[in-house]
Image (cartoon, rainbow, N blue to C red; front, side, top):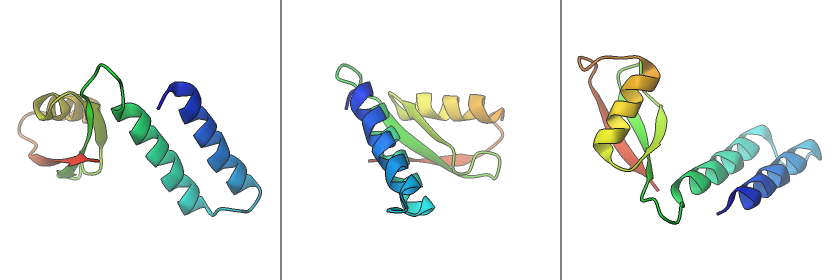
Length: 93
């Protein structure tokens, strides 16, 4: 999915919400799906989405990275935690 397609899909989701054709939870899910699809479908890049589970400091954090070790480091950086914080990563999609 290219950037223009992603933006159009998000606009469609927002328009449906504004017109009362979709509730907030459904709109959020549509937007998240568009973002994850966009973030993981780069033609020349084998990136994937990963969700951290475990410690409250990182639980639920989703990152896009080319590998699990790089995803783990990105989670640590974004959540400002050190190596002592333990968590698992689940590959999404």
